[in-house]
Image 1 (cartoon, rainbow, N blue to C red):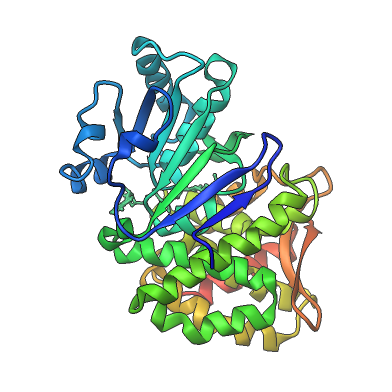
Image 2 (cartoon, helix red, strand yellow; image 1 turned 45 degrees about the vertical axis):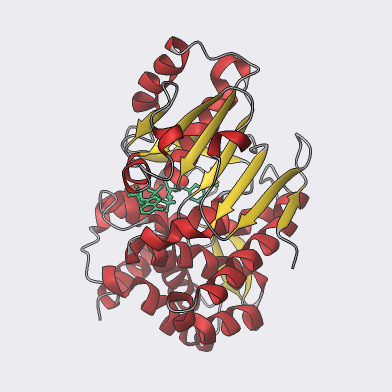
Length: 356
Ligand SMILES: NC(=O)c1ccc[n+]([C@@H]2O[C@H](COP(=O)([O-])OP(=O)(O)OC[C@H]3O[C@@H](n4cnc5c(N)ncnc54)[C@H](O)[C@@H]3O)[C@@H](O)[C@H]2O)c1
């Protein structure tokens, strides 16, 4: 395997570079006159290795919280960048996970009508999934990911050494998105990953193989449908339920773990609606459950869950637009569902079996 991927986008090709260690000369690669937005935990944990970045006057340190990923909380960041005299020929740089990525991409899309940006993803979720695909998503109040743009970075630097300091829940969160992408690739790909599941946590080379595989699978879809108007919709598998779980638990469940629960919930409901043979639920459930086990007992109140589902940005006037595996081959497809009593009861049944 080469040590880079080249992704085609509406702004031209961009590269994902893969490195084993940490960035050696961060400012050497960060573009013209960088303004860095860095995750506060990363700035603290890597204060020595990233000293030149962390101590630079144009660097802004941000706590990676969903509250900070809101329109309201990004306004002070816009103000700081303007106070730091940012110009169109400068570069914004994100160093962090999906939250810092979303904030940076959104600002890069809108400030001065657009700035180039680069990304150093430091979480598994960002390295294996969110770093490609062009999307930014910002929360408005407590409505998650409802504002956004399509604007890929110019360059992505995946340094796997950042994963050494990641909490176990954040490794599981990234694995959730890797499971989703492999489910989309087909039952064979998912089942192989399920067999290798334990090694993801013990053998870095196996994890790196799956990071590359997940990006390569996603690449095929985003290059066909970068603006998510067709085939790319299926990457929302697990996400309508997952976002609703995040929202109903006040973000008590990390994103990729909520997505893992969301896939299990989609499979469970698909069986009850006659869309999916039970054996596919049973085939996928053990590994999904292993990935969200640490959060299976978190209380998920039903009324906020239903309220969040009804606000999902993919819904149409015909109903909820959900993604389910369907048929003998468990092909992942969009389905429009009316949120009636039967649907609410199916959700409720899943929430009752979830902690068991
Ligand atoms: N734009 C997209 O395409 C896209 C895709 C998927 C998810 N997302 C968004 O991404 C967010 C989730 O991203 P995430 O899972 O990367 O989480 P995150 O950015 O919230 O980071 C998770 C935690 O890990 C910490 N952290 C980051 N790097 C670290 C490191 N190297 N060592 C130790 N701790 C580190 C952070 O401070 C934070 O506490 C959600 O808001 C989700 O909606 C965006």
